[in-house]
Amino acid sequence: MKLKLPAVFGLLVLAAAVSVDATTVRRLANEEMTNEADLIVIGKAIESHVQWIDRALYTIVTVEVSETLKGAPDHQIRIALPGGIDSNRKFPVAMSYAGAPTLALQEQAFLFLENGEDTGGAYAIVGFSQGKFSIVADQAGVKRVSRDLTPVQVQDANGVTRGTRTFEPLADFVDEIRGHLQSGQ
Image (cartoon, rainbow, N blue to C red):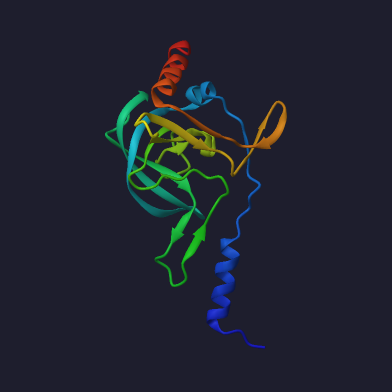
């Protein structure tokens, strides 16, 4: 039996779409992320493109920085997020990682970042998806940080559990991180 090209392509797309949903990360407290980060910023994603680095596909996001809590960034920084879609090939290639951080265009985020020695000079998010908090306004217009770790398993001293969601006022979160920065000096 001879398979036609569309059938083969369909099987390849289906195989590429399968992702492993058992990603496990070591739970990092906000204090740990503060200490590990080279740069802590609040900013907005303004541009993105995909790029191959070695044999892995990354989405490189340019973030316009509005506030810096740690480090001295430029007005704009680049962040490498694992995964993406390279549609510039004869047959598009996609890579995805369960629980990997994402940044949508125009999304505001609070970010814990580390120097990207392995990512072509772009920053990496500390603790995989743990170091990225979306900034959203609640119904009353209060800005809050939100993080969804439900796609990953989180390991701590008590074992491995499913990740959780967080939702707290941005002002309180900023105060907490500034407190960690002051106590770490």
